[in-house]
Amino acid sequence: ASGGKRAKRRREISIARQQSYPRCKAIQKQQPEDPLSIANRLILATPATVRAYREAENSPHYDFGGITDLDISTLLAIAATETFDFDAHELLPLDDTDDDNADIYPIPERYTRIFARLNAADIARCAAAWAASEELGCDAADLLPIIENLCALARRIENGQQLYFITA
Image 1 (tube, rainbow, N blue to C red):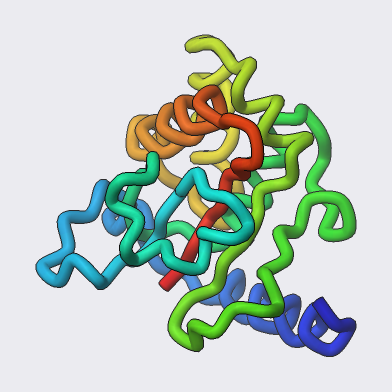
Image 2 (cartoon, helix red, strand yellow):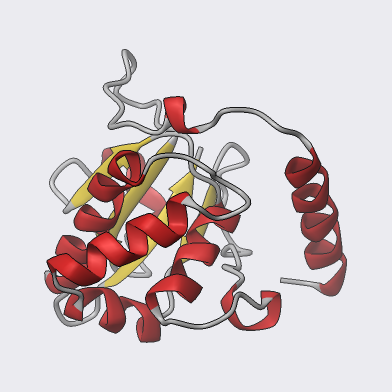
């Protein structure tokens, strides 16, 4: 992403952090009325097929709501037992997507490998720390399904596939 896009994104995140609202009530597995409408999706895909995420019902995926790319970036740092740093943990969207209504973020392979190795105790630790983060401040039980599904998808990666986070 260009420097201008990153600066704009950081301003948006700063504004979002200043707004206080209970987001955890929105974090749940979504059952959208319109099958082409998703809020968030974790999906296994290849770089060549990820842009067809709306038609990816046969691809391993998990749909849910209420989470931003900043939230996922925070989770990456937590899972790696690192202090959050934008330069190290910020997810960067694909620049070459044709979809103006969605952002597609590749999850870096380093973190995918970490999630693939997490056990139940590690997942619970991540959920507790993530729930207590400044951005969320909610109950860990609300976040467990997201982390569990992220780990399950990470364990299923095959040659050529990558894990992606999509916001629409």
